[in-house]
Image 1 (tube, one colour):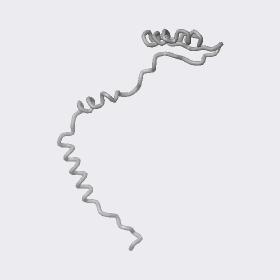
Image 2 (spheres, helix red, strand yellow):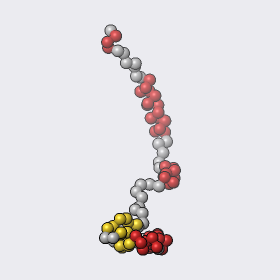
Image 3 (cartoon, one colour):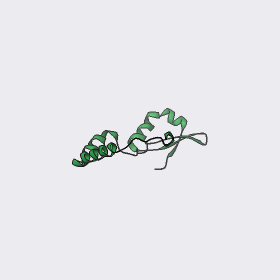
Image 4 (cartoon, helix red, strand yellow):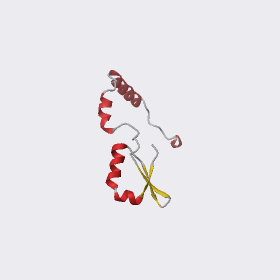
Length: 92
């Protein structure tokens, strides 16, 4: 929707009315002072991303690893146990 030109004076005199038009009709306005656009009011842009409130439900609905997670932990512990401490080659 193309913003409608609106003088700053008119906006100031009818501020509540114009805010209601933005809120309920989705109107947008270019606020002018003289011949210069100094501001724009209109509905906010849609927010990108996933709402944080729904994150717990999303995670609860994902498939689980079941026994694979336990096997993975055992593999990590085995790999760590097999590590040797690094010696300083300059000590010899």
